[in-house]
Amino acid sequence: MKKIMLCAAAFAVLCMVSCGTSKKSVSVMDFSGEWNIVSVKGEAVDAEEAPYIGFDQKTGRVYGHAGCNRLMGAYHVDSLKAGKMNFSQVAATRMMCPDMTLEQNVLEALGNVAGFSHTGDTVELKDAGGKAVMTLQKRVKPAVTLDDLAGRWVISSIGQMAVGEVERTPELNFDLEAKRVNGNASCNVINGSFSQEEGKPVSLRFSQMISTMMACPNMDTEQSILQALDKVRAFDRGEEEGTLVLLDGNGYPVLTLEHAQGEPAK
Figure 1 (spheres, rainbow, N blue to C red):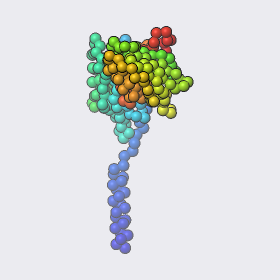
Figure 2: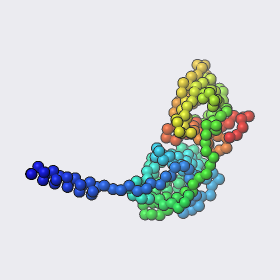
Figure 3: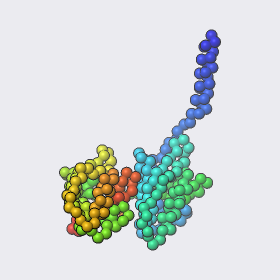
Figure 4: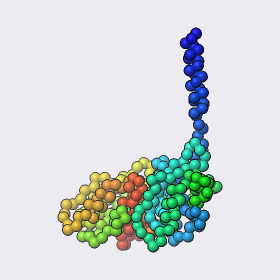
């Protein structure tokens, strides 16, 4: 009898603890896709290249353009508290532009985000006090597909550094049907294959890359290109027409490509 009473008491305590600590999750908004940044700190954005932010719901990563540089980072939407979210590890590439004010405001605003509200295709990002620091509107743009890679491309920059004077203009040529890539890395001819992850149309990974072994006066550029190719995990259209960017696993651009002369613009 004593054992039964002890078991019953233990069960009652367990139920009380369980009931006291359980929390109901709330419906989490799907931010997936890209959003134009239409206002920052209450001021409408007026820029030739409109800044935007993209959300990858599966990985919790963000990417985009802050006004001058590409941005990347992480975000979290609270599943227990409705309308709560924050950004973390937000960083940008380091290219300098004549006016960095918009970019500085965008990055500062993202750092202050603690919540959001939404109506239709418009989202307001808010600080801890509930004040709107940024307004987003759903961005409509043509989907990026493997077809965008087709053809011959000149490698114009490595990371944020423009390719300088080299022995040969580095380039990549994609054969989509054979899933092969060839070209040169500024000195030697390179060949290899590429693949994509199933269900991820902008994923990209190079493999079995080989090169000839000619020596040139300056091999630094070639080594940097080969290292960058090994880091590539995705691609996207560049901010300028006729360009592509090859991205690493964090969404950071490792190579920028420009259509070679004579190639039709995508």
